[in-house]
Amino acid sequence: MAGKRLKPARSTGPERQVAAFLLGLALFLPPLLLTASVDRTIGGVPLLVVWIFGGWLALIAVIGWSARGEG
Image (cartoon, rainbow, N blue to C red; front, side, top):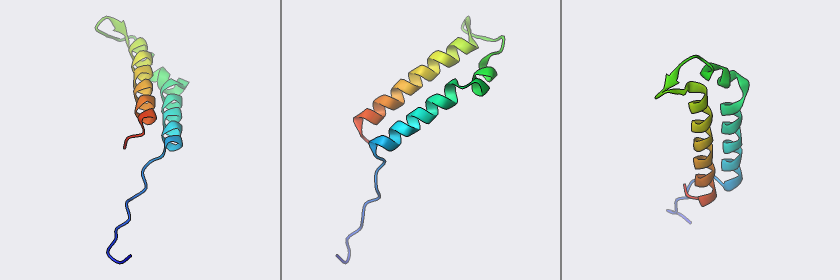
């Protein structure tokens, strides 16, 4: 046993799923949505629409990364 190094524990699937859930809550709850609810556009698209679809895309990417199980 002497000389063996223990590897640090990797993040497990349920922990990643909880992180994805919390990210979704943070992105789509009114306090942060109100910050994107201004009269600005990005490429002619309202900022709120960019926020919602960008957050949705980010959430899908995080869930996909979580489902792969890679660190």
